[in-house]
Image (cartoon, rainbow, N blue to C red; front, side, top):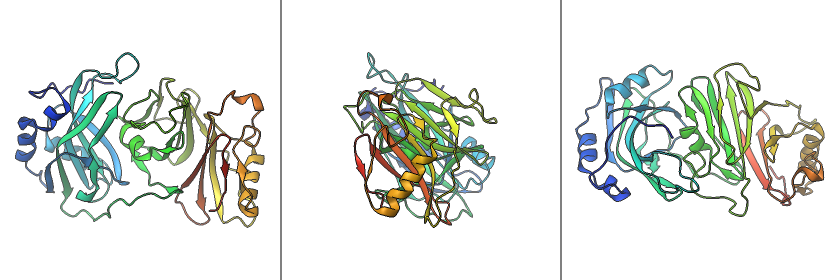
Length: 348
C-alpha cells in the first residue's frame, strides 16, 4: 500500500473518530467551488460509484483547485468527487489484519455531471481494517451534461467501461463476484493497470464470494488503445502491472490477446472472451460448444474437459468460468459465470 503523503490523523484514531473529526468536516465545508464549476454537495460520508468514472489522483492536501486542474487536463472530464478516506498503511493480510491507518485525499474524475444519488460508497472492511469516507464534496463543470443514477445489475451483468489514459476496464470478476466498479476505482493507477491479487483489498472487495476456495481467480476484460485483452491470475500471487505500451508478456504480465473467433452462423450474440481457472480459453471447440448450448437449450456442464483442459488441470473444484459476450450489433458487454461442476443454462 503506498504512502499517500498526507500526514493527518484524527484526534480519535478509529473509524468512528475519523467520521466525527471536526477538522475533516470543516475543511470540506469551507472549500469553495473552483472557477468554472458548481458545488453540488458537501461533507458527505460516501463517495460516488458511477459507470462514468475516469480514474483518480491522490493529493497531499484537500485542494479543490488542484483537483479541478486534474479534471481540466483530462479529456472528457465533467466533474469530480473529492473526499478523505481512512486507508491502511499496508494491505491487510495474514499476521496483520488490522494495520495502522493513514488519511488519503482522493480526487475522483467522472465524464458526466455528478449525481448525488450515486454517492453510495461508504467504504468496506479489508481484513479487520475498516475503510470509511468523510468530507466528500461533489463538483461539476457549469455546462456538464446530466447522467442517470446507477441502477441495480441483473444476473447477466452488463458493465460500462472506465478509462485512465489508454487503459479501459470493461468488466472484472473475483471468482463469480462482479467487482467491475471496485476494479475501475482501485486498479487504474497513474496511467497503468495495476492488479493487486492479495485478498482482501479495495479492488477485490471485503466480501469473500467463495470462502471454501483459497485459490479464487481474478478475471478482467480490458482494452489498451482499443485493443482488447484478458487478464487472469489466482488470488494472493502478487501485484501485476500492465504497462502503457504495446502488448508483450513482459509489458502485460498475466494478460493475453483475444482469440477473436467468429460467431457461428445465425447467432444472435458474439462471445468476446472465455476464461476458466485463471487462463483464457483458446479452443475454438469450446466456443462452438457454448454456441450449441444456446441453440439447443441443453445445459452446459462447467468442467475441465468441456473447457478444453485435461482432467488433471486441477485436483479440486476451484475453477470459475467467465464468459463475456455481446448481442449482435451491440457493443454492450454482458457476462455469465459458473463454478466448476455447476450446470449452466445459456438462455441469453
